[in-house]
Amino acid sequence: MSRSTTPRRRYLTLVELSHSVGIRQRHLVALVEHGLVEPAGDNPSEWRFDEQATARLLRALRLRRDLRINTAGATLALDLLDELARLRAELDRLRRLVD
Image 1 (tube, helix red, strand yellow):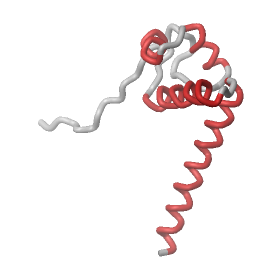
Image 2 (spheres, one colour):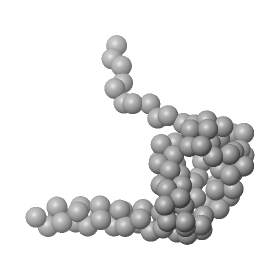
Image 3 (cartoon, helix red, strand yellow):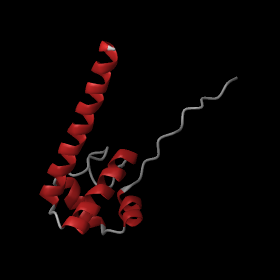
C-alpha cells in the first residue's frame, strides 16, 4: 500500500486567519466583502482560507501599511499584479513553444 506524497492543503478559519495576521475578525469580513480575498464557504462561520488567500491578504496589508493604499486600491493593485503574473507565465509558455 503506497501513501500519497502530495502535501495536504492547509485551510484557515476566519478566527485563525485574523489572529495569524493580526487584524480583527470584523476587519477581515469587510475585506472579504470588498473582494480582496475569496474564502470557500457561504458565510463567515463556514469560511476557509487557503494559502493563496492568506498570501494575498498579507500583501494587501503591506500595501495598506507601507503605501497607505485603501482597500479598493489594494484590491485593484493585487488584481493587476495577478494578471501580470498570469500574462508573464503565458508569454514564457509561448516562448518555449517557439524555441
